[in-house]
Image (cartoon, rainbow, N blue to C red; front, side):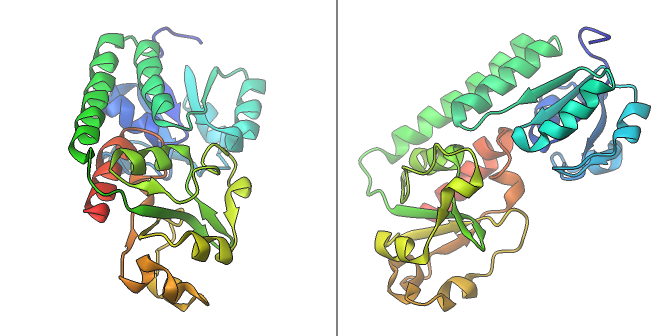
Length: 258
């Protein structure tokens, strides 16, 4: 790292962008992912240098970053290329709520604002505890979260945990520890057999179409379909493992289960 704390940071996923803004450290950000939309002003303030699995390496290098933040194995090739160019890279890999909170604390310490990051993470922990208390003793609907439709992919661990915090039960809890989407593929028969009370869907940025669920053979017998409890949750607030999921994402699940 050329500078500590780093003064020029490129964020290749959204959750680190939002975290730095929440910590008042947005002036350190010199480039962002094209998917960064939180806060809204980031689109006007920061140049976009990447998609999710691809990045404009020359554009990133031109920004002379002290640090590039990446996420998951899906960005491993980008990270490797930047490392070969001599750039310092931090690759986060949080897959659950505890990991999201750890990322916030670690990133805050990295940019020299550990106390602010601790306060932010503690605020989220308290909010989660309060919501858990509010849902204690209430009926817990069975929830199927669909991350993609063709093939059908169930929710990742942090989504499953948020469903549980909000007072629901994940229909496929045995799959949630699987970090790779290919290991969470389901058959239509499995969902029919599970008979979820609620279906939540976020198709990785593609608009969710409830009529597609209704048209699936045999799905008319699923309680969620029969009772019209199919709810889209927008990808930026649920499929990014950061502050958005712990705030607006959790609120959206609470509303869907009410």
